[in-house]
Image 1 (tube, rainbow, N blue to C red):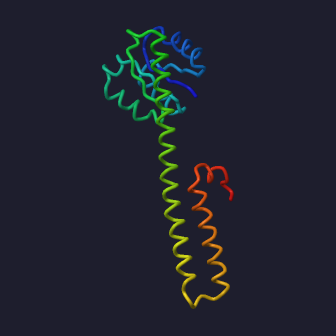
Image 2 (cartoon, rainbow, N blue to C red):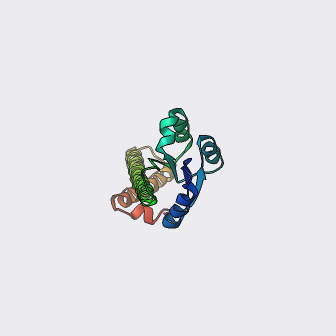
Image 3 (cartoon, rainbow, N blue to C red):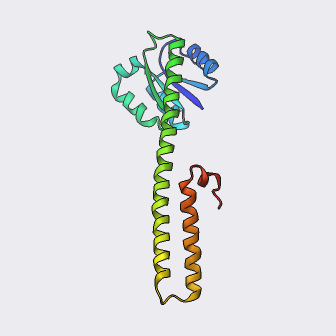
Length: 171
């Protein structure tokens, strides 16, 4: 996990050292848009912190930075008005927001997958049970359909109990 600071102020390296110490993360400094874009091509960052003055002077360049920052949390702050403590708070808050959003996204994805699985399992169970009611099913096929119906019923039951599927993924 690392942070990219994009700022042309003289104290940027000192600021980076303070952030590294407080957040226990590697911090790289880019003096401007070009060096920031080069750094973004070479490495993934957790956060990209851009000085507001650079954004105001070069909106197009700032947009290019945001576009190339990938999954990094964008943080824009006025370095001239903010001290290290405020910058650290802003970065920490942005990283916490990102973690929360990722947890919510994971939960939503898990819920969507569970819903799809429930639908598929219901279809398997229903169709296997309907096939068993047909009078012309050979006994070997009927035995296999019963196994499919039983497996689908077991899966449906496990999906109905929170944590059961995740606790036994191989079953």
